[in-house]
Length: 92
Image (cartoon, rainbow, N blue to C red; front, side):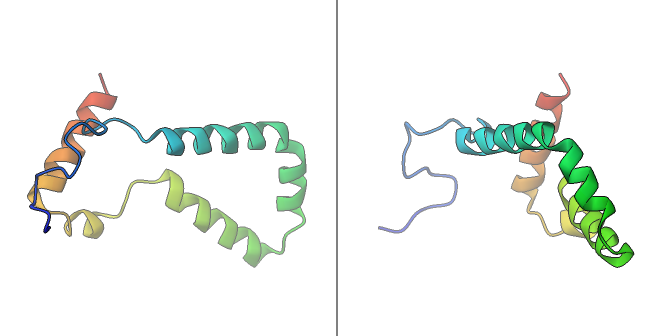
């Protein structure tokens, strides 16, 4: 059976826009790990060579900065609408 765009294969599944519980749990675990190991992480960072520090910072930026504009241009109108809806919901 072929899926149709906009029709869920599981109509009683997770409602649209509801965060993935697993993702939230992983974020919380990572935040706890960072909180508990801040001193060690800082010392490890300071022991890196300058080029490795830059690589580390670059990798972090991917997780904290918004996507570059050229990435947004690849989104469909539906994806843009969903993104706008989520941003409005998060800013309420």
